[in-house]
Image 1 (tube, one colour):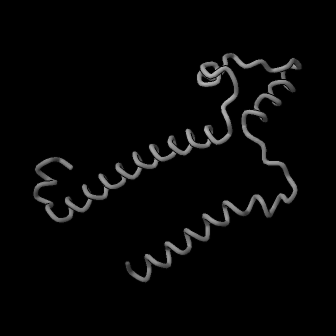
Image 2 (cartoon, rainbow, N blue to C red):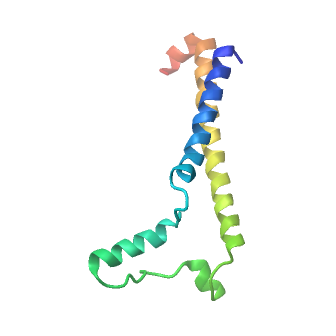
Image 3 (cartoon, rainbow, N blue to C red):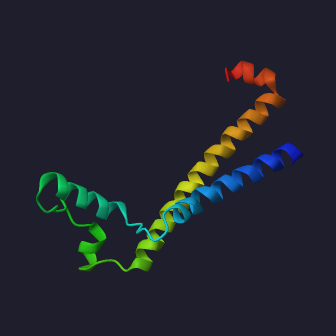
Length: 113
């Protein structure tokens, strides 16, 4: 890794930390609720009636109650892992394609890349 790349990585890490920590510092004592709660409250304000969901979640209906928070977190982490895996695969594929195009430009021209 070159010195310039290390500097860029450090700057990006600092920006990422500031994006995560910034709202907590700027809005001390604020409640950070979920989007479901905020959305249903906004709908109730606009329509003047209580918001009623269109359907019940499939898993909650299957088990006859609300999912424990740990299970919801587990499902969310699995979903996140799958998404990160797909993104990492695509990034690797595009980086390898770029590397091969620079190593073998005659093949890239022949293939129309």
